[in-house]
Amino acid sequence: MSALARLAATIAARRGADPSESWTAKLLADPVKAAEKFGEEAVEAVIEAVRDDPARLTAEAADALYHLLVMCAARGVTLEDIEAELARREGTSGIAEKAGRTG
Image (cartoon, rainbow, N blue to C red):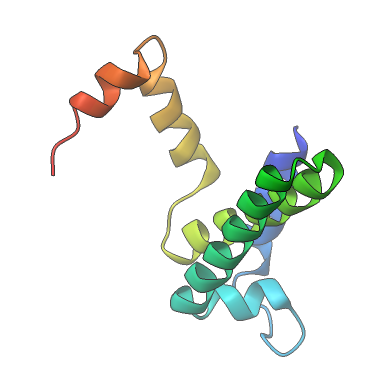
């Protein structure tokens, strides 16, 4: 099992935990807050990418991935759902995939 899969499993296990004792449970209970935190972490990752600091980018990317998984879990989207969508897109160029989107 990959580190990302273990993280997703840990996040799923926190659903229903006491939000006063678990940051993950607190975010799962408030999907809007989870989305805000993901946005903050994504911006921090972008800043480190622009600064060209690989160590800081690695740390911020890890934070962003955690918060992305929590945000998705708060809305019922699992890592398996995301992996299935990525698998569906395999073999399709990014340009073609984007052109095929509706809405």
